[in-house]
Structure formats: structure tokens, C-alpha cells
Image (cartoon, each protein chain N blue to C red):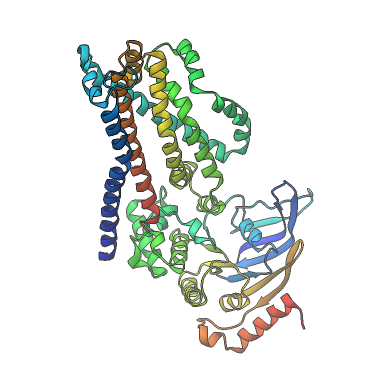
Length: 266
Length: 261
């Protein structure tokens, strides 16, 4: 028991230290770039306004009130889109992994849909769904779905047959086999798929907002660009970058937790 | 009374390309209730397929309509995994659920069938039988191979099966652990009166554990010999393995498998 407890404490300290060190060294090039930009940049440049002018640009002309709601809009579209992509991707991935017939039936359609650039879906989506949040979410789901779907289905196909034989021979119900054995077994593959899908979802969220001007940080970027406010564009891009940093470390944390739960911290 | 009856069993195994290979043909035998029977044979002969048929995981194939191919467990034809039969796999790592604790793994077959209190009783009972009562809360990856195989055995016992099917359960373990587990299995066998069908390719192990050894050979394979082991129970590693009955049976199995040289 005492041994267990000791090994519980040690990894979490190590994890904490690792994250702190990583993020410090990882930010170094960015800090360097911005400092150089600030020092040798031309303060009058319409293309490369100095970083010190970005923050104030967010609040000029009474536009300050728009920032927080825009960030919340973007986060919501991204979150719901990723959630939808995860649910749909896991459901379809499991079906394809379990039933070879289903996999063969939908395979070509999925290959076709997967190759469509999200930017090409946007006009169709606005036509069918209009300029609203549902449209944004649908586009994000269609773009972020694939890595999750493919990882889940190959995760199921790579499962050791002994595991499925075990479930059958213990005469577990279909529901219990699915949710108690199959799903937890492919969880690492699913989480990996979600990790790959996360930046895609965020990029597509911003892209759709930029293209359709429907709410969010992306829409503000488009607006700032059209009204010749380069400093504001950079400021908004910096916000998007920070958002992606936060989201990615969140996903990595979840992935570590899932991994640690089954093999410990070896 | 016969627990398992197998008459003129035929079984095919499909290859990756879809071609089917006849593995078993005309396999007939009976296993009595409370009997310990081993199935021996060279690797690839179809021992595992036979056990999977008994476990209801592999369907026998009746080619001709007049075929009298039949597998019955306690007087009922086997179609799908029968109630009262537990299967123990060689590959314990893939069979245990790595995210569940030892106790929760053993509990798995009881969930949705028994109340929580009854499940606790069964789990404790099964873990005590395999000598793992103190590792209740451990995760499988914290245990040695032998211990993990014990967990699998406990899970098989938790449903208090009438018959225990074991597919080379100790094949991946070192010699000392193997001897330990053999003795533990014999204790459980005596204490519970469970019927055991045990697949192995270790002649000594088959003879040491069993009342009868069936030898599977040929392609397609059938039972080519049935060797009774008359060593008295309880058996012990030292004395049984030196007894004339043990040596005689071992000699016989050798003879059947390798021929008289």
C-alpha cells in the first residue's frame, strides 16, 4: 500500500515539472522573435506593426467589447464541433471496425468526403444551413471527424482477438461488450485521434468564421483586415495562438491520464 | 454421467484468403462430470480449435446432411458459449482488462447477473481459491505473469462453472511458476469437483494433472489414443512424478506421439 502511494506522488511531481520546463523553453523562440521585431521593426510599417502596438489596437474605436464575446463564440464552436466529431467519429469508427461489410459499404464515400477541402464545404454549408452557428459546427465536424474515425476503426481492427473471445465466452451482453470492453480498449487510439483532430477543429473554426463573418475571433480578423487595421489582425492572431496552446496542453493532459490509468507511470 | 459428448466432430478453419482447411474430422470422445481430461498433440494439430468448439466459440461444420456430427454439454447441443462453462486463455495479458483492478476483472462475468453483495462474496471466494486475496486492488500490470494467469483463473471460477476449459494456460510461464499453478489447479479441481478439459503440449503436465489423456493427431486430426492415468490423488510434484503409474502413462503418451523408436 505504502509503495503504491509513493509511486502515485512521484509521477505527478515529475509531470508538473516537465510541463513547466517545456512551456518555458518552448516559448523562447517566440519571445526572441517578438523582441527582435519590436527592436528593429519600423513603427510606421503598415505590414509589420510593432508588437507593442497590438494590445492597444484591440481596444481602439470602441471595439474592446467585442473581444471577449468573440473568444467565447470561437471556443464554443470549436468545443461543440470537436465534441460532435468525437461522438460521430467514434460511433462510425466502431461500426467500421466491427463490421467489415459496413466498412466496405461506406469506405469510398468516406474517402471522397475526407479529401474535400473544408473551405470548399463552406459555400455549400452556408447555402443549406444559412449563416449561423449550426453551419459553423457542421463544417468543423466534417473536417475534424476523420482522424478520430480512422484511429478508432484501426484501433478496433488491431485489437487482440483473445479480448473479443473473452467477452463472448463470458457471455457478456452486447451493450456490456461494447461499452465495457471494446470502447475502453480502443480509448488510447480514440484519444490519439482527438489529439490530431484538435488543431484541425480550431483552424477550421477560425477559417469558417473568417470566410463567413459569422461571429468569433476569425470574423474579427476578417473585419480588421478589411478595415486596414494590421495591428489588430496580429493581436487577434496572437489570441488564436494562445487559444491553441491552451487547448493542446489540455488534450495532452487527458491523453497522459488515459495512458497512466492502464500502464501506470513506468 | 457424461458432461461433454463429442461425436464425429468436423471443424474447418478459414484462412485469410477465404480458403477453408479441414482441421478436425471424426473426433469423438466423452468427458465425464468431475473428470480431468487433457488433450495433447503437436502444435497446429487442432487442439485449440477443438477447445474453441467445446467453448461454443467455433462452429463445427456438418458438410453432408446425413452427418451425425454433434457436440453436447450437459445434454444440450452447444450453440454459442454454454452457461456453466468457463474458458481460460493462454494469453492472460490480452484477456484481462488492463484498466480494471484484479477484483473488478474477476467481477466482470457476474455483472448484471448478481447483486453487488453476492458479487463481492464470489470475488473474494475466487481470489482466495487462487491465493490472491491480498491483491484485490492491484492493477493487472503490477502483477507477475503467473499472478495474472491466476486472476484469469479466478475470473473463470467466479461464475462457479460446471466445466473449466483451459487452452495451454501455463504455456507462457516459467517452470517453477508452472509447477505452482499446476498444484493450485489440482487443489481447486478437488475442492470444487469441476470438470476440466485441459489443452497442453507438455506431456508431463498432461499426465500429472489428468485422469485421462487424449492424443490428437493427423490432418485432419482425430483422437488417435486415449491413455488413462492411474496415479492416485492427491498428487504431488515429487512423489507422483516418480510413481510407476505416472511413468507408465508418460511412456505410453510418448509412444503414441513419437512412435516406438
